[in-house]
Image (cartoon, rainbow over all chains, first blue to last red; front, side, top):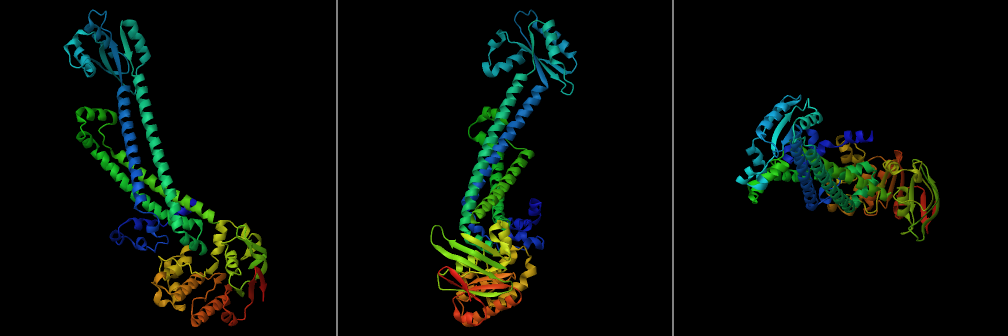
Length: 332
Length: 218
């Protein structure tokens, strides 16, 4: 009930009015324009240094959150791709007519339930897959390169992989099936590691922000000790005094948070250009794209940045409130 | 209204500033608190205002045992008490009007509901022309009157004043005393700490006299 009444009674209109330029406020309804003198002067709360620190913290938090989001998005796309596909591998050694065997296996696979497409890869296609490691060479044709059949499966009605595996091994010699489970597990591990790393960085940023706000609150309380005493004497309770401080810190959090988030958004927009300018070239761009996509955030990604601003602002407000209450308790 | 039972107070391990102070004040009464400088008048007022805790004894203010009150309870009780400090304690970044209106703002009242009351009171204490002035530009006497106006604007049940006429000329001093008497007539209990005998002689009110840490009522 206290929290609800706190939210209901909170001077939201004056808070909003405080964040907007005077000429905008003058066009708002009367309740937004009634701005009584601040009991705790803004100038005594925090200087530009604190704003810059919180903006940098928000910038780092947005970059981390955005990067983790992009890695997750790319990893999800990989997983989706490989879970809808299996690969059948034919060993060319001891096989007289590999092309015939390819056709037979492909026909066999096409008859199975839950398989939507069967695509035998030519010898050239298989050789191309090895080119990144072995380079372009005519010697590849002399090597016994395994032949592959890419099989697309119906994810809504998947085939019985184990049954197909067994049938292949019984009917065809030197034919194996790879359902990419190991690769999927590795991607999931990588994604989870990236997410955990990101969370750890976000946790550190949050801890640093809390420490900075606690320090700033104490400093503000010390600077305004005389005002707090007078408020005490005229009967102000903890709630009133802490609200006076938290209003300033919320405004500070929103302003600094938005600055940091906008800087991060610009960073995400410029990231592909910067990568190119810094000499990455096509290979680096391609590698980056493979890892985290194009490096540009989509709408949910930008929403995540807005969420970071919201969290930072709330963190500023709640931390300052708890800090004020703690100091006030020491007065009593 | 107020009751002190064997109250003693010392700062840290120092000697007792107040010793075995016992007295009671009835609702609607008017008292002077007097004694030589350093006798403990301000300390006694701070005990009454709950900004100090006694080292021993019991203090009842407005019928409440102060030792049993929570911080919120003490804040609630302070709202029923007006206090005038010797050093005024006006907020420098607020105008005279805003300083006087502060207790009402803290109570959560709407400005339009008390705007005229604050302005009228400031005119009454002779600060009608200084409504928008900041404390830095006020004289000592003007600050004193602003501090008194702030203490009485909320019609407190108990008014505590520490040397309220110390910085004003006799004319304004008499006017302020009349304000205190008027408030008392309306039901506010008043305790004025002063060593101004001329002021005390103007009113037939009981005197609580502090000397060497002990209190006597005359």
